[in-house]
Amino acid sequence: MSQLSPVLKQATPVLAARAEGVHVYDEEGRAHLDFTAGIGVTSTGHCHPRVVEAAQRQVATLVHGQYTTVMHRPLLTLTERLGEVLPEGLDSLFFVNSGSEAVEAAMRLARQATARPNIVVFQGSFHGRTIGAASLTTSAAKFRSGFGPLMPGVAIAPFPHAFHYGWDEATATEFALRELDQLLATVSAPADTAAFIVEPVLGEGGYVPANTAFMQGLRERADRHGILLIIDEVQTGFGRTGRFWGHDHFAVRPDIVVTAKGLASGFPLSAIAAPTELMEKAWPGSQGGTYGGNAVACAAAIATLDVIQDEKLVENSAARGAELISGLREVASRYAAGGTRRVGDVRGLGLMAGTEFVTAEGRP
Image (cartoon, rainbow, N blue to C red):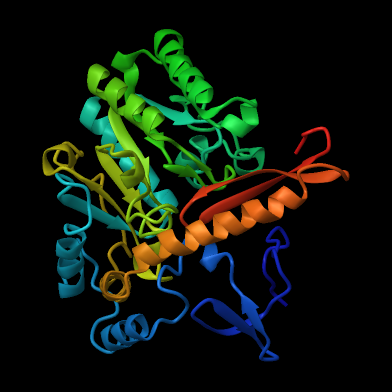
């Protein structure tokens, strides 16, 4: 008999039969509170009635309209609607299926548009598992190991992870930007550097927020050297951090935004957005795909935008996130001293909240 790959490991023993809102129900009818939100995917909760209705209606009319062959209304409507929430000037969109695929599309666009080979990533990042995306990922060796050599042209700079370094945020930020300047002087010359790619909050890297000084420091260096700033909003976008986009916390302008996960409340859909004059620099044939911009996923994404707006889910994310982080810090204060295990740090933005556990000696 065939079976799932034995390499796939489940975080829980739950066999899900149905889900609603923040709960997943197993086959015995027991409710489980889903703290993962499908790894940041179910931005409107599980099976929101408006998303379900939109998807059901679309399934009955057009499931697949391959968008380099024919066009369909859900894709055109979604493109228009995203223009209402995207950063000003990012008026051109390319749709694919997954976060990894969108990251690779952004990287390809950056290299073609600048005619430069190198990409600078930041320590602790997660950008995906496919070869190109895994080459940009530094959150854990397991995402990079065993199938090298990886894609060349990637340089890794520090992220201002204050707790990791044992510094305050200002010191960690100054260090990270100084090391980035050193990297540009010694490893990847600006004339060879196509883009910086950064998460506003490290996801798999430990829910570590960036900060305004760091993000604006990246923007300033990008402008000075003609480097593109790609902001990976796959996990941080669509309200997860208490703002619609994670980079909204830092008043920084991206050249390319990558979005996926919460975009369609659980349907596979991802996209990159860039100014038209930048997107036009992509080479002919470099953008396409069989399932990108699927009609049902687009219909679900439109309904997702409606629900987020009408139910004020971004504002709710900010309020519930502040409540959550406050509660986690109160719990952490009980374990500030004594015992062999302690809570070393509580951090996050909105509902991307992380608790880091350490030994009495401060080790992970």
